[in-house]
Amino acid sequence: MTDLPYNGLVTNRLQGRTAVITGGASGIGLATARRLAHEGARVVIADICADDIGTGLADSIGGRFVRADVTVEDDVRNMYAFTKETYGSIDIAFNNAGISPEDDSSILNTGIDAWRRVQEVNLTSVYYCCKGVLPYMQEQGRGSIINTASFVAVLGAATSQISYSASKGGVLSMSRELGVEFARQGIRVNALCPGPVNTPLLKELFANDAEKAARRLVHVPLGRFAEPDEMAAAVAFLASDDASFITASQFLVDGGIAGAYVTPL
Image 1 (cartoon, rainbow, N blue to C red):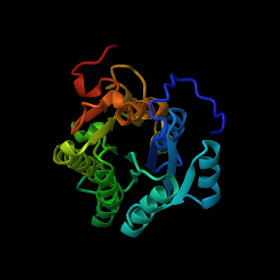
Image 2: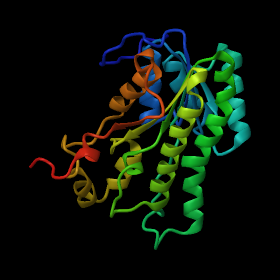
Image 3: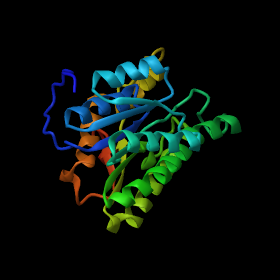
């Protein structure tokens, strides 16, 4: 593995395990790819970015890149088949790809095409990824699946993104059900529920609207947005044996939003 700088605590908890990360070329996905690699995992980055970009990122952590559109079931199947053929196992699946487009807002303004596009990327892709990886994990008798949901899966917002919120609620519900169904087969399934994170997605959303950012930030008890590395640390924990008794969980990493009524001044 190449020597990529990392300032956090590294324990090698994932030595010898293989992880597949969708949406792994940016944001939370890329931060997680780096973290898991430094925890000892062999990492496959899956994304729709250009091959040279994805390959460069994967090379920087000693991993591999697969170009995959996770809304296409054949791409998902090929992604896992490649991983199994390359590394011999699939121990961790971080199903993280997602979108939050501007044309997804109030239900009164969101058209059906925008609704369907968000559902395909954020929810149907997780269905494909879980369905695709579970047989490999059943064969091994072990595995950890982490699906990216959101704090909006457990809270309502007047600043609505109706399809995004609905899709993340679906991810949370599906993760809970799969976590229960496959628990006694050695497979854990959890939903990571991040609060607002300083990713390109969030920065683009707030780039030209400081008031919009401030309206959201006031609800965070910690007084800031999360960093991608903080989500990566949560994924590393859920993927490891340190989380061996955690399944069917909504794992909130939200700076206290879901627990707050009045936030500090």
